[in-house]
Length: 506
Image 1: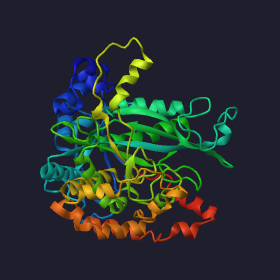
Image 2: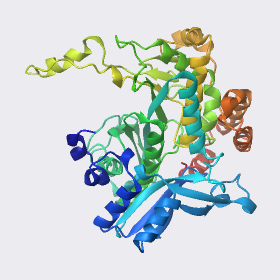
Image 3: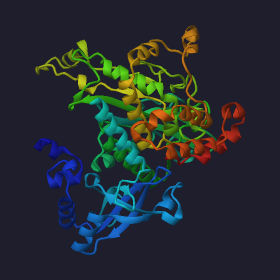
Image 4: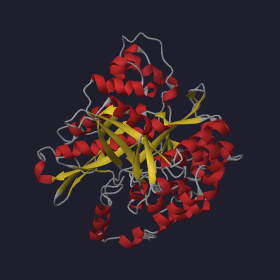
């Protein structure tokens, strides 16, 4: 990392220690604590419900600090995860130094670190979602020579008493995309959160208001999005967890509610968790060729993800209201296909900086005199089905499995060609093309059946265990939500109760 990058990095530890976070050592953490008056430590880790938990320590001596940072601590796994029995529930939580950040919400100077789970023998917990993600990525690299960089688009609704906002400048219902104040009411909340995430090490790309906004009898609802930059798969998952927690914390300070629920009400935009992927090899993008065109390996990776996409919903769309979002005409995918710049597709290849696009800067700025740069490395492809109910570690593990599957498939390029679309499949004139495409699951029950059918692909190379997959299948089937959308049609009060049940998911 260049000295100028260190200076501009918003992470206080990076600035103070003068090194990137992935080089932090125990001695670095102790130095920062000693020299910056840190009084407490928080260990954080995701429970079975996907939310960050906390274990608090008062730092009482150098020896105590050294011990905690060296050994971690013990926790009750049976209280964190349904599948861990009480008679053998002790787990270790061990801090990851690269995740350290100064907690911006504490009155007492406090340092927070994310932790990994380990079993009684000191091995990574086999059933830990984080561990499965790491295994999936390691297998991808070992078997194919490729790796994935990823990032997420975090969509959410801000919900507040409608009597507590300025109504002189109302936004147009379902027309809030990139709206600005005074027509959007929670831009400052979003910007406060973006800065807090960045100071904790998150790589923020940008933030903006989203399409969804509406008012009912009691509340005002405003949809926003914070989008990240692509990075290594572990950092991407960890920083997203921190971001979701921080957003809730800041919302509480504002006296409002933030929800990642995939659907707030019928007929209004739902919130997704789109995952952008970048296929990498030897530290460079393999997503596009030298001319900026999508590469054959990327097309194979896309085909592999599409081939098991119905099963991936078991990790990315985990509650009944997930499937109230995946309906036509709501910019959410319903069918298994991919396309360029196409928001009706399950996987979309966004507009890239290729060809004459590099000349745009000279038109906007006639005095621009630098040589044109190659921005092909920014190109990604976007999986659009997942939502805020996702287990982010398992979702990314599933996408790693899909990528590896595609790179190993003999007919991957043929499948890629077959599933490509260049039209809006929801328009009447393209109904024949729509009829040729396989549907995504329409319920947790259907998602479970899809996972059953594809189990062997996920278990290959010992990435997922059969016990874990069977547990996920059972949990999904237990919702008993087959044809739920049909059963709830027109029953707005029942829909409201269901939405409220999952308002704080993830």
